[in-house]
Each structure stands twice: as C-alpha cells, then as structure tokens.
Image (cartoon, one colour):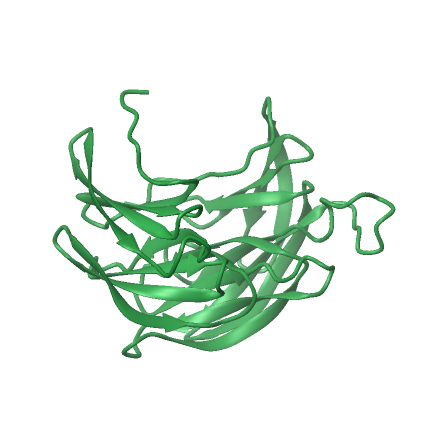
Length: 261
C-alpha cells in the first residue's frame, strides 16, 4: 500500500484507460464517477462526472480500446451511460442504453466492436440475462440478450475477444430451504460471433460466485467462490471447461483483475 485517495461514496468498479494515464471509479453510493490522472505510481483525483442522482447506482466502468469512450452500468435506474474521453476531460454524453434489470458488471472486447454486461434482475429466483452492446453503432446500442440463470455476477472477455466468461450465482447464496437454492455456482463460457453469444461450455464452481479472469492464452480461468473461500482453477480448450484445482484464501474472494496489456 503506497497511497490512499478519497473518491466518492461506496466506490465499486475501477478501470484504467488503455494508455494507463487515466483511471475512472464508479461511486455506487452517490451517483458519480471519479476521474483520476495517473503519473507513474501517483494518482490524483481531478474531478467527478455526475450521473443521474445519488440513487442511480453506478457499479462498474469500462473503457473502449481506443480510450475515447467509457461505459458505466447503473443498477439503481437500470441504465448504461456513455462517457466521452478526451485526454483528461471526461464528460457524460447524455446517451444511454437500457438492457435489463440492475445492470452490474461490464466488459469491452479487445476488438473494440462489442461489449457485454450482466443484469442481476430482481433477485426472486427468476432467470436473468447478459446483454450485448454494439459499439459500432453511434451511439452504442443493446442488440441482443441471452438468458443465463440466477444472478450473473461478472462477465469478462477473453484476451483475444473470441469468448466471454460469465459467473452465475445460481441460487447458491440462498438458504438451503429456499425454493430457488442450488448447490454451487456456475461458470459459463460463451463463444462470440459478431454480436451473438453461443454457449460453448459450462462448469460447476464454488458457491456465491464472484469475479472471473482469463490467462493471456485464453486456456486457463480463475473463478472466485465466496462460500468456499476459494479461487477455482479451470482449463478451457474451446469446447470443454474443467475444474483442475483451487486456491484456498482466508476470506470470501469478491473481486479479481489481471494485467490487460
């Protein structure tokens, strides 16, 4: 730990710009996105972008590969905002999309043509969705949605943009007496064909499933399980997804990222 910065209330999602010179922080508790400059190991807060009101609930923010736009999910009012980025100037374009109920995690393909986001729904045991954004449209638009199960948590593209991994809580976080309970979460991997997602493989993973990351070659994934207090290790060959081991941790792992360059 080399520094502590004050941003906004309940900071949740954090992303660096592709050139590493800017960072954006979604402040879920106050309806804003903080803007930070990055110079070596020094980060400086230079302002905030206000999105709706304090209840809009910005959850996560993701840059496009060219660094000129960023997308922000808002689970409080069910919107996905489009921000413009020009150097250190970040503004709300006022363009937004509506996908499903409670948009949460978001990931942009390295190809720069599509993004995916999870919609966590109403939490009643209904099947929820992952939505696809066509970034070639101006402004970007939701063009497809896929039913994935109870409460999709994280969605992350593989480094080459050919697949996207989605963690599903699957009712595993509920009491065993709950009618929507299932033992264990799920990790689903979808093949990406333009703006279409097709299920390629899935595997049972630790309960109350959280974040997921890919290895650089796209053959290994790490999936977090809050209930098992472990990070599951999975292999993927394009057709089969298998749990090959796990890493035990002291608490429930809830957020994970890898170097993307």
